[in-house]
Image (tube, rainbow over all chains, first blue to last red; front, side):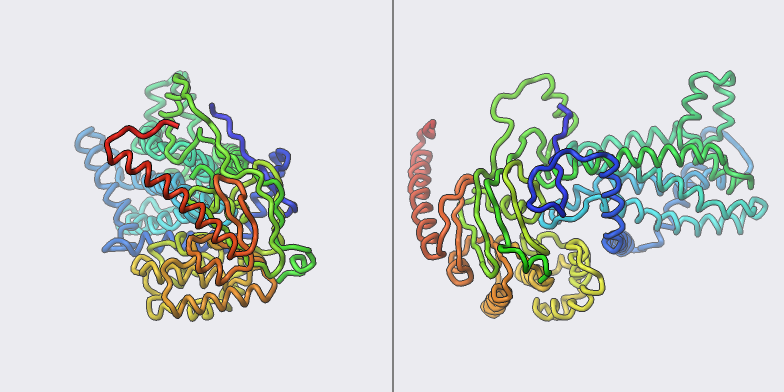
Length: 292
Length: 273
């Protein structure tokens, strides 16, 4: 039931008709070419996304600054008062995880519907659809960048002792996160065309993922639970968000180096996944207009 | 016009075109449905042909009107010509740069201004940014929407939206222009203006294909017409002949519908085919 039978075509081929199934490498090359030739379109889509998010609410971009701060307050109240955990500098500890996670969830949320929400234009103009998930994920960088403002304020006002030169590595970790997110979103945006409940499902999966990753607690907690390095510890290590959270926390909270080798593995894994999901996207792309 | 388009003997050549839709995936399919379908076999067709055995040619300077009843496959035909959906069988040869804002103005982003939407549409159509900047004033002037150009599209009337859409689609200097449901809402002045624009494009030897329910447009604007019913070409000829044939066919269909309606109103069960 889950077989897709897309019809491939090369635009330059004339006359157009059904063409034989093309190689995966060829599809990846084509996707790269499409993105490069449509940079302007990606930029417009990102701009449109940012204007809309900023202009539609009363406080506009102020929410981008307030949002992560308020969320931090909620978790701080919950964990220190209800659970009774009193780590020194816990607000900053949590904030270093909330910031990248908010970027991730908003990118996935926008990305899942990035193709289906452009239904009308897809039925009217032939253009490379791969720009849609790309623009959704790229637009998310805006909210992340704005989140760095309250982070800076927190550091300067309350946690000056945590400031270290390692902070300059935040963009490096963010770049790994970007590739990882893009790989996921390219797949989800295409799958959502065929199964409209992907968006619903992904929200719940994301929430579970958050609590299973060391966001509110450190990786040290897991070592207490599974000291012998059993299945829990192994699964925990395989979770890319363990690497990402711990790396962000190292440079922001502890003032130490990120987990270099683990980050490299996440980057390589994400790049390979991105290739796979791009091939999937390109294979099902020709049937978008028919299904939408 | 691009050199390549000028060298070609025709603007559009379609041979034995067929488009088949699968009914397995529709816009409302969910994972849950798919599991349900795995366990219960549904009866009925899983595929249908939206178009079958369609062959025609559009020469340079032709304006071809496609007419037919609702659901005949007219819009599908335009989508295949634009390269939005792929043919299941047969071949299509469209020369040069295609402009295909099919349903005028339906693809606009409601929250963006008219100006931003023009630039966005240009980017979707794959037109160079610098090129678009040059054309921008002309597009705004032709659409004639005044100060609204910097207001969000959601504040526009349907007429303004259609005017802006037509203005963009025809201003981008296409070799082949595809228009769906042209100007149901245009006022007299804009109608005259757009007629002039279409004739200009015809004189410049562009190929135009338009789908419309407005028979005046067919006879006034086009030099050829094609009648499609149930996905197949019924007739191809001069606009006058085709319009007459189409009107005869719709009159027959209307008689049948009226009879059906009378039966239902009389309380009888509809006749089984």
